[in-house]
Length: 243
Image 1 (cartoon, rainbow, N blue to C red):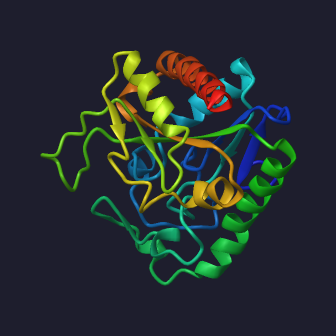
Image 2 (cartoon, rainbow, N blue to C red):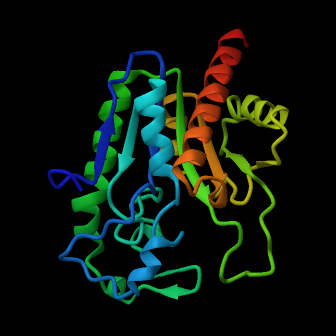
């Protein structure tokens, strides 16, 4: 966290252009919060979307797509959940108990982390008036709780009611020879909280991009994917203008 804020913003939005949001970019746990999980679990997918911070940061610094990036672990407070969702302060994840969150003061966590994150994001987007929002996430190749279920997709697009941008991005990623998921491995019909609130509710176009974590585990891979996603986002924005 920087200056006690649960987010950081990289780059200055140019009104009417593309921006990026990364809800699960960090595994940071404040010193005054004891989750009760082994330290090594904080480096796994249960604590953060591995690789997304590096991709978002590169998109902002090298490709002129400013980013709003979370600086707190999803185990402390999950920004990609509504305030009244059961998992906004998770008590378990992929078979692992989070004992420190059992009986936690959920309203206090929301007030400290969730509301400042989303209030700042809302103001940032209102000022930016973006033509397209790229929401970055990543998924593990397989869940520990379902070890026999391989996830073959290299990248996927999620959406709820508005798939107007996603259909273009799915096509463009497939043209790159990638195995692309369409509302996989999760469905945006069930899990789209941040874009439901900040995109669909305001009529803003968006891409929720899920990247398989083994493909963005190194800085070199993150740089490649930052360039690829930037290209797909720019081409999607052009396609939307021509629609």
